[in-house]
Image 1 (tube, rainbow, N blue to C red):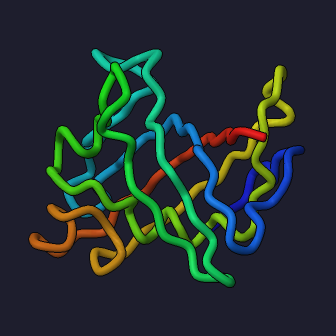
Image 2 (image 1 turned 180 degrees about the horizontal axis):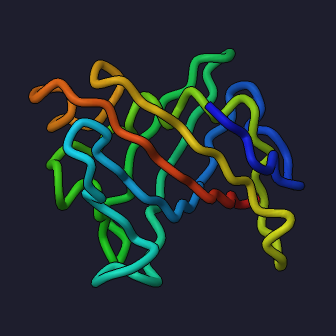
Length: 137
């Protein structure tokens, strides 16, 4: 994990659930290819919306499949649970609504297949992600 920017908002507190928006790149390291992104292509402008919960230090989350734009990851992989590798970064990020890029949290992750999305887990390949995240509050 490389934290590029922690963000200027607040950490997700104990027993708190927060809606978080993410723009991301998903790169298949084994296949040497960009697999999925909402930064360019058909989904540009549609952030991934997630509901992230902190239950005494254990983070969990689900993609918001009810939003008008839907969830790109859910539509692609059919699983509404947030990628476990993404959740590993949550304790270190300060999420909030920012107006400038400097205040937005940004992290780069190499996620092993065991902590990845369903195709990575099934086909045993790691993915590299670059995420920019904002959260309400």
